[in-house]
Image (cartoon, rainbow, N blue to C red; front, side, top):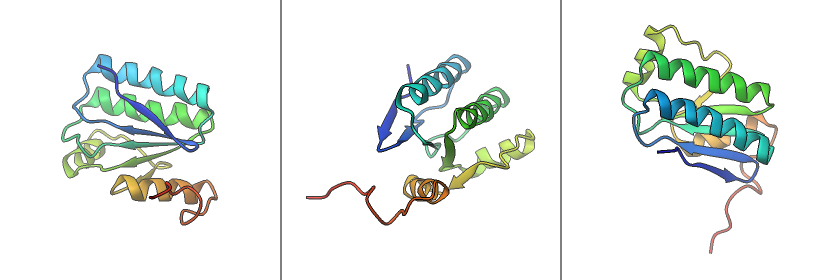
Length: 129
């Protein structure tokens, strides 16, 4: 099963809804990089709210995805990191020094807009009505 990658304005939004196995994580890495290439997106928000567990391989793949996206010119924000995932990442020595984080998707998008020099209170809001 592939992880859906949605485009919203100039961003890619990824919400990982289930625990990743190694094959799915590698497929996600390839799919995200291809989507960045196709769309020219400036930023990526990866939401981990539904993830309660992360192992060392998945942590490595996640770190690699972030580095690769940065090489392709996209900023990455990780949102919804659960306490157990944060503990695991630190215990595994995974460094996310240059990665923006936020508690939820909304704040993640706003942080990304600010990082990219955009006004989060203007224009990118969906039209209501």
